[in-house]
Every structure is written in C-alpha cells, then in structure tokens.
Length: 480
Image (tube, rainbow, N blue to C red; front, side):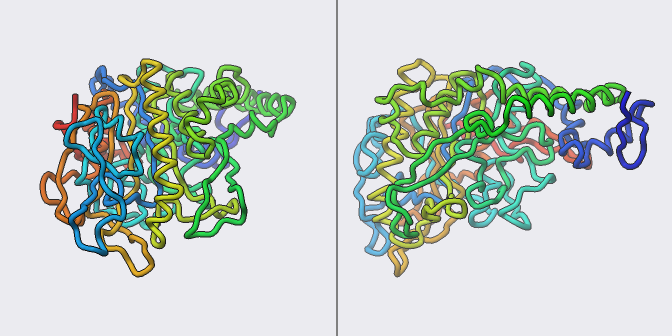
C-alpha cells in the first residue's frame, strides 16, 4: 500500500486527524478543492434554502467591456448633441418598450423580457466581481481571481445542484467560449468559485478566434469567428494511453486517500474520476459537438464566436446544465483580433453599427426563437449584461467611456414578467431618477428565479457566513 506524504508527514495510511485533513485540503496538492470554507458550506448550508424555481437553467450573455445603454435600451432622442445616440428608438412587441433600431429582431421578443434601466454598483470600472456575485467592494486586482473571492452564481448553482441531485454526466456550470479573461491570459474574478472551493469552478471550453482579413484594427473591428471546443476531446490533445496512465496514478493515490478520516478527501478521487469521465464520455462529447446542429440553425445564430457559443449554451441547458456563461470577450492577447470587445472608447457608433449590434441582434433573437420552439424558454432564464455601462457624453474620439452609475440589464424567459421596464434614468441616461437597482438585487433576482434563497449562507475560510447575494433583494416588479 503506497504512503501519501503531505506537509512532510507520512500519516495518510495511519489516519489523519480531522484538523490535519482540513489544513491539507487547503493546500495546492488538492488544488483548493476542499478548503475549510467549502467544508463548512457543505456542512451548514441545507436544503431549506432551496425551493422549486421557475428557471431550471440560466444562460448569461456577458458583454465584456460595458455595453452602452444609451445606444441600446435607454435611448434619449431629445438629449442634446454630443450625448444622444446616432440611432433612433423603435417600438417592440411590448407596448411602450423601445429599443435601438439596429435591434429589430430582438424587438420582437421584448414581450418575453424585462429591462432594468437603473442598475449600478460601486466596484469600479471593468471589475467583473459585482456582476457575477453582487459583491462590489473593489478588489486589489480586477484581473486576477483569488481563493478568498465570494463565489459566482454559476458556482453556487453547482454547489446546490450537487447537494440536491448529486453528480451527473454533465457539469452544472460551464463557461464558453472560454473562462472570463482567458483571451488575455488572465483568470478574472467573479465567474469562479472563490472560497467555496475549486470543486465548484466552471468547466471552461477554449477556442481559436480569428477575423476574415487579419490583422484586425482596434477601433475598426471585424466580426470575430471561431467555435468553443473541449480541447482535450475535440483536438485529441490527450490520447487514451495518457488518460489511462493518469487514471492508474490517481487510483494509486486514491488507494491511500481512502485510509484518510475525512469524507472530503475521499471525494477528491471521485472529483478526478468525474473529470476523466468528462473527457471520455460520449454523452459529453455529443453535447459539445456543434456539428450535430443543422447548417440552417447555425447560420441563424451567426457563424461567429459569440453565435456558436450561444448555440452551444442552448445545447447544454437542454441537457440539464444549470448555468452557462457566454462571454463576448477580448481575445487579442492570444489572437490577431481587436481588443475592444464592448469597450468603445473610440468610434462607438461605427463599431455598434457594423459589427456589435447586428451580431447581437441575430444571436439573441435566434436563441429566443430556438428556446421557444423547443419548449424550454419558460424554464430557461436568459440574462444579458456587462460589467458596467458607458458615459452619456461622447468624447472627442467619437467614443463613450466607463460608467457604473446607471446602466441596463435585460432578463427574459423563466420567472420574468415579460414586456416590463423597471426604473427610470434622467434625461441623459446619466444618473438614476427613479427606482435604483444595485447589481446585488439583479443577482438576487436570478437566484429567486432559480429557486435559490438569495440569503442562503456560504462560509469563507475563516468560517464567516456570507449570503450568496450579499444582501440583495429580488426585483419583485419584474417577476412573473
């Protein structure tokens, strides 16, 4: 029987104390899978915080960089020049609700959607943490996730899903086409499990991003092409022999770990086996295989990285995945594509007119049509947001700059009272006039639709409880 040595103490096969196991579980040998906060969450958070919800799954369309509400969902045609949009508002399928003229297909689905026009947070610009967690204390580094971060919504869903339904072939939480920040060689905070433990981190695909005529120019971007892929499966990156060797090694490790006192450490082997199961399962390979979709539908979503990723999100929620983040992100550090994403400091209107709004319009409307045709729109919550908005005033380069004081979030589908607008901005969409909505209230609304109590506690590494929505309250006026 092999001996496992941790912290220089070969006591695994002789039996560890619970205290030693907790300490060991926080170390990198186990990858942070079983830190103390995670164990406390497992022990203390019970099923009393979960109830049947309208939404079985969530698709979060995350527009990285900050989409401009003044040019999309809160146009102010009577504002002075230098502030008002070049685009005009058009009526939608919801009486009294208008959107930008470059979103005509999306306009046909506003009777299923709610627009919250008065969202704000105090977490600073380009900070993703508030949008995924509701926690808006500015972190020391907005580009790096930490094990002390609060868990994102998808990770909380993964935790609740495991407690209520156990492990299943597909993970509960997936990020496509990659983890937030992957295209910049970063692991940005917000979308990870933080102090809940890496066990509940998302499964992230990877991608190759390209444009039709490289190289791309920053403020004159082209449509970004590409598809999300499970690299180890789709590209043959790991052979069956390599997988088998790694499996045998883990079996040997697991043989020693079974002697440990902690149930959590015994679960480590199961976690690793589940990871191998993902790589070798035909069900998983089929779920991530966009080639099984008809060309006509793929064309409808758009032959873009964002369109293909959104189509994959539909395939995943249809198969029971609880939370899928689809990020329209910056991939410029890895590939020759523009780095602005939705961060339109220059040429705001040409960028929106030629690439961003037409692409978003096609993909969003295709998703709504597809979910509805398959009979799963009423059990799928579709959320569209970015990490902030943009300034009402147009700068001298024709762009809009960072703005966190008032912006819009759109929610549609399961649990949402369609055709509704909540909150009102001032005459320039600069500041909130009526009914402010902190981002934590949006997070609480999403949890409510999922049947998760927004006040459910999870425990950090010091054992302190934190409500998953950080004090946010559901926006009852937009709930069905």
